Image 1 (cartoon, rainbow, N blue to C red):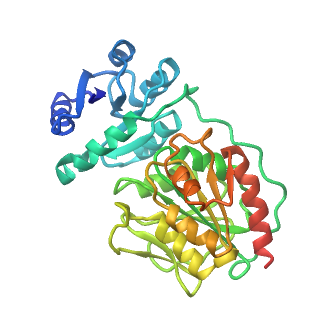
Image 2: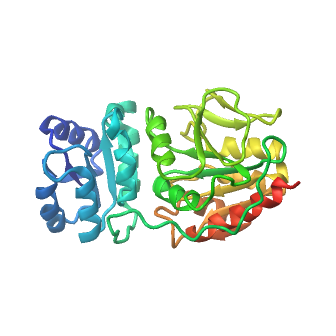
Image 3: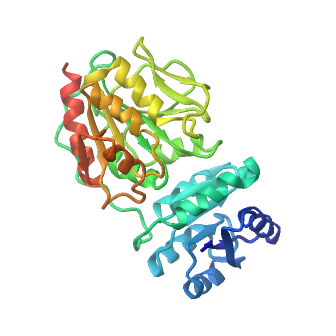
Amino acid sequence: MPTRIFVVDDSPMFREMLRGIVEADGDIAVIGEAATGESALALVDALQPDLVTVDIEMPGLGGLATIAQLMMRRPVPILVLTGQPTGEGSTLAFEAIGRGALEIASKSELGRDEGAWLRSLVKQLGNVRVVRHPGVHRPPPPGPPPLVRAPSGRGCAIVGIAASSGGPSAIVDVLSALPPDFPGCIALVQHLPNGFVAPFERFLAERLELTVAVVHARTLPRPGSLLLPADDRHLLFADDGAFTVSSAPVVGGHRPSATLLFESLARVEGARAVGVILSGMGDDGAAGLLALRRAGAETIAQDEATSAIYGMPRAAVERGAASQVLPLGAIAAVLGRLASERSRR
């Protein structure tokens, strides 16, 4: 049976183009369209699609409000299709994730590989089970116990975190509980469309007490910092104790690759490192997390009950890569303890 999708976008031309791309192989069917959020709500209730695609900027009931209403009325997997992020509204796509959407895709890339990547994404998201969402960001979980302040340089604990679909909300839930004097440097691989790293940096900086920065060149780890790779670059930990970025080939369809980050941490830091895999589709990071665990590091996978998409964490657990499987609300406290221990080594 084909994956049944509903398209919400105010542009008739875009809706026609999208239909042509997703229906090309015959295993996806567009069962309805709407130009406004208001008209979409009743139609989605009636048609019950497997997936809804939503544009962020629409007249009337905008994309964010539409997503929030859909998740309160009838939870359904939602894919945000948006233009390249610019200006003050550039973080809206990540606000959409916070309201219940699962994934972001850029309209400018829809024709890449003749749309094969998009059809694959639609089919995967269409099989995800979602739960009712309150339409607002969840409050952060209780913070960890008081931490030992670590100096810059050698005493700084290194934590690698990987996430994909459903990841931005999980990342905020975990990292918003960490204080600015967190005694570790966090290196984050979050799968994003090209061009979205800068708005993701702003999205995180507005919500976290950590210092958020994008790595473009050699960058030393500092306690209380969160590092992201530049667009379309791998993030690696080098032998000299600095983070670098690389344009090496994609790994498993991803650049950045969580597995490459974790493998570099395993090689350089070994047991002193910490690795975490949060919500996401596929298996990126599982092999790297296993390398970390074999090097003696503590490794954490988010549990199934709290994962928006239990793909990447499941792959890690099934490979025996996770030394701990934890609910989302418990991860920050564990990171605080582990980072404090490692900052004193």
